[in-house]
Every structure is written in C-alpha cells, then in structure tokens.
Image (cartoon, rainbow, N blue to C red):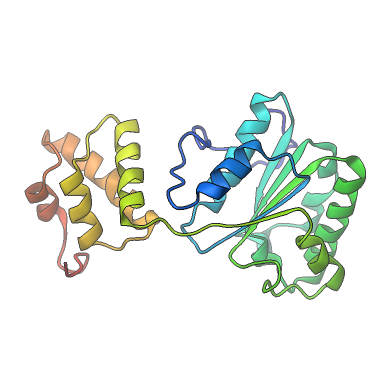
Length: 231
C-alpha cells in the first residue's frame, strides 16, 4: 500500500471479511459501501473501532487508493505535525481522537486537516469512545466539523458474537475451538475481547506443546484461581 512514512502500517488480515459485525449490521452495510468524505465511528473499548478503521484502509488499497493510518493512543509522544500533508492521500484514518481532546495544538491541527481534506475532495475516518456531541473538544469549530458526514455508533458484541469471533480466530490459527469450550471460557474469564484473544493465543501455544485438543478439562487446568471468574 502507498502510504506516507508515518512508521505505522496496517496489520495484515484486518479487513471487513475478518470482522464479526454481530449486532452492528447497520454499520456493516454502511461502511462497506460508504463513500462519505467524513466518517466518525464511536463506541466503547472492544467494540471494534480500530479493526474497522484498518479495514477501511485495506479496502482503499484494493481500489488502488492511497491511505494512512494513525493511532493516537500515544498522542503525547507524537507531534501534530504528523497531520501535515495527509490531505494528499485518498483516505486518512485517525484512531482514538479522544486522546487529543483538550490539547490545543492537536485540536487546531485536526481542524485544519478537516478543511484541507474538504478542499482536496478526499476522505477522513475517525474513531473515539464517545459521540461528537459528548467528546470534550474545546475548539468550537472542530466540534462542529466532527458531526459532518457519517456518524456511526458501534455496540459491544454479546456472548454469542464473542464466541463467533473466538472460533473464527481459532480457525485462522489452524485449531478448532469447540462451542462448549468457548462458552466455558466466556463464563470463567473476563469477557473483553483483549482478554479473550490473549487466552486464545495462550491456549494455542499450550495445546501445541502438550499435543492436546481443546477441551474443558484442559482449559480448566490452565486457569489459575485468580483468573477464573465464578460461573
């Protein structure tokens, strides 16, 4: 993919096809077919915002378009100058803009990027944990820009959706996660997708080392008392 040298690339395989939309069906159809110049995705941690932002970047690549992906989780270590010149690209994806709320230089830089992208007739996609209305942005003009275009809320997956994601990721690793084992995990450990994904990786490593299939007794052996939650 053609990208500006931000030092941050798109992760392989993080596409729409590898995302389980679950109870976010509206977002599924809208994002895959959307050509809006401004997209704002918001929702709680673990709702898939970063995945979908990178999926938009991969989609742009399949169309021969240029893009950039910039996560702002560590915005304090980055400079607002990173936003200079991005309007030259077909699509700019900026993750976690709530991290730059109330940082005057960042807010002003993002405001000017909005204006340059509008003039250049290119596209901008943003994510945050809250809606444009409740995001604590102090620059009034930027606050108004955030509501331009498409605003989509993402919901957390229910347990069945999380199980489907775990099984999909297990198959991608070449292993089979039986439904009863997946449900056992969901009732015994933290249900956030980061914890579940970490456990899936651990199970993959341990099952390969022990040459054992994933069963409830095997998983029970691996759970320490402080990690296991009551059923």
